[in-house]
Length: 362
View 1 (tube, one colour):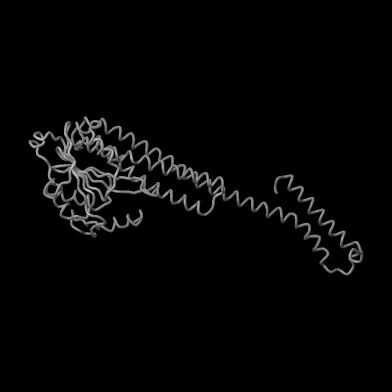
View 2 (view 1 turned 60 degrees about the vertical axis):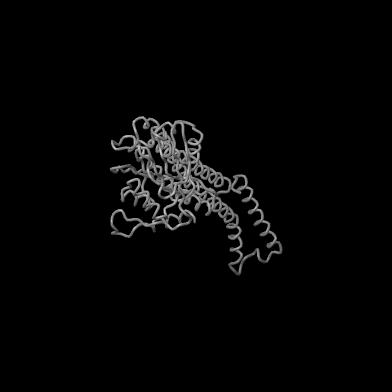
């Protein structure tokens, strides 16, 4: 399913107007929902696939006994009603939060609830064929646990999973809020290849316009790339707003210790935004370049037609004189009249041709 078809399908999953708050529409099952879990601490990490009844947070006493700092439940797929219901019951997910998780797409945001926080981000990544894929990632952040729910399999979190398995970095020695930061950081880092991909597309198009003069297909490509740029700018702007809320909000699930790290993510998001601003200016410049090239090409055609007309105007004038059928035209009775007129016409045409050639008009 291509990007535009997928976007229409997502909007089609929204409840009908007037539905009660918290109602949601399940996605069509392209593949069964997949669940995996990580239980980890500074000296321990277990990756496993929980059953439905095993989807629950660990109590503080159990975490201390098992030396587990965080439990991460990672869910791919939004089509399993029993799975979503179990998550809602076990982790005390508010009905409004559950609806926001299922009725995609939603804006990137953070919503505090009594028992946990809902954090929604927009994951953007390049998939096969250079297609830009948009997907919502919902996080429920609690005390010592975190649940992520994605629309489908495939994400940008595998390097983070590898860090958990191999005890790289700080993630295994920190809490659930640090895991939330690490997930957001992975999402923002994935924005850079997308921004670079769009920038490369604009540069290739600029080179083609300069070398080939630009055509209708190039104009269509400019419009298409500007549309992709606008689509990508939206989640980047929303991410900036989300990061500001997480850093400054009084009810943020991110502790002051972790906010130091989150400021670096905010800086990365700003860098992506600046890249997109430059690319928007580049897109406008490309449009002007295409129009200027088209005008120059039209001017060259008009100049050529003007030169040709200028050569034939005096020849047409001479021919029209001898086509007026007057009775007394001495040249008509002369045996040399015809060749003389032809020679004069050739000389005039040759002189004009040399003149225009020296002026580089031909």
